[in-house]
Amino acid sequence: MTPSNVHYFLVAMRKPLLVVGIAVAALALPASAQPVPGGPGAESLQRQARIDELQKFELDNRYRANEGVPAGQRVLFDYGVFLQFSYLSLDDALGANHGLRQYDVVPYVRFNIDGAQELFLRGRFGYRDFNYGDSFDGRGDEPIDGDLDRGYYSFDTRRYNAAYNKKVLGADPSSDFNFVFKGGRDLTYWANGLVLGTTLDGITVTLEKGALGVDVIAGITPIRTVDFDSSRPGFDYNTRRGFYGAIAKLNAGDHQPFLYGLIQRDYNEMDTLDLGLIQTDYEYNSWYIGFGSTGALGPNLRYGIEFAYEGGTTLSNSFEASGAGGLFPIEQTEDKIAAAALDIRLDYFFNDRRQTRLSFEFLAATGDKDRGTSTNTFNGNASGTEDHGFNAFGLINTGLALAPDPSNLLLLRFGVATLPLPDHGIFSRMQIGVDFFVINKLQAEAPIDQVTSGEHRFLGVEPDLYLNWQVTSDLTLALRYGVFFPNSQAFGANDEPRQFFYGGLTFSF
Image (tube, rainbow, N blue to C red):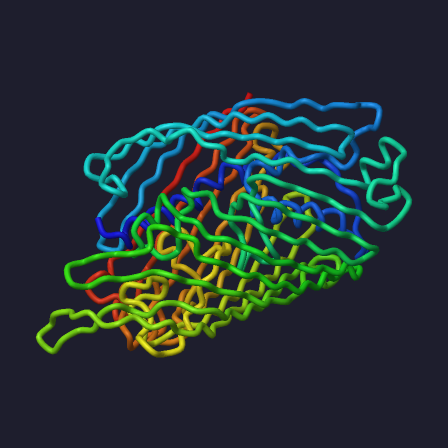
């Protein structure tokens, strides 16, 4: 199996592995929420907005510190285990079907002192059982090595001072200044997730003064992170990239504008690929400047908009094609990056007891017509040219079956979600929904991360269906099904529909 196919499967796996956490966290919300500005129905609007946020932050958000831990309760100790069984079936770019059964054991423990200090640890280990010949990396059935999935310590000075009647770092309980520190391994997610939505080992410092807040981060990806460049040796098990930046946010009533800057540095040690006479070196160092806003446009409509510009340097492709159909090596050059992307989201809430929501998303990301692939260095940017392909480290929903990286994409998503039986006991926390994608290339001549024609922008359409059902307080079912219908002119011989199915059952205790 080629590296690109391995990358395709690993990307496909990452999304369904989040859905169990999505289902548990979203359906475990309290029955009421604090009202927000905006008029009648705002309470339901906030509840739905929180569901959206939880969809982005995975399972561990369920165990973060609560705002109202009583000062007299000196220590809150929480622990438990999740047992997960998952089944995945998907079609690859060549039309072959692959099946996987995965078993996960996820223990966690949390200490929280006065709501001001928190220590959270979560591990993960398990086993992957593939259908014969369906292993993603050719290694067959294999255990999932035990690892620290999440682990961090956090300290909130305002809560600490309120609990102990002190003034650490000047964060008087009655003042509007606060200082929050968090160090360890956790998911870092900014704005709409266009540029940054990945797990980091590092520190986050939050400074708040009145309506203004600033988050400063410095961290490195855990070594088992899957890299965006699937041609690099060890991309699926040995990745080291550093992230350093800050995001400033303003709480202006119904609107929360933001501005950020982020630097990414390539620390990968496995950075050379030898294929016969062709040697490819890897070094992708990028930076991002972004801005946008999130908030509400009236009592029923929420929005999110994020624009990002990418700069930096990358190494060019390492070969050229000869007239006889062969490849011969060329010297790689260090080329400048100049790329951009825009993501816009709208969610309309009906404020009914079924919590019905309509959603719309627009994504546009630049591509580069002299690239062979949108994400890789091998067969990547042409030597001596500026690289206009947008590549970042976010978490954007581009569908289940095709699941392209957000580079050279022009994508529209339409969605609806509801609780169909909110008054029927065991079915009251069953959510169903559908997302419909219209997928295009921004530039017809530029590539995406899969082989397509250079003459057609329209790639195809994809409906995705999903179900999140908290059957009981301890049992959750999550189902996903998606099918991509390709434009035969864009995909040529590989124009058969691609299907994706995921089922996950979680038992917690």
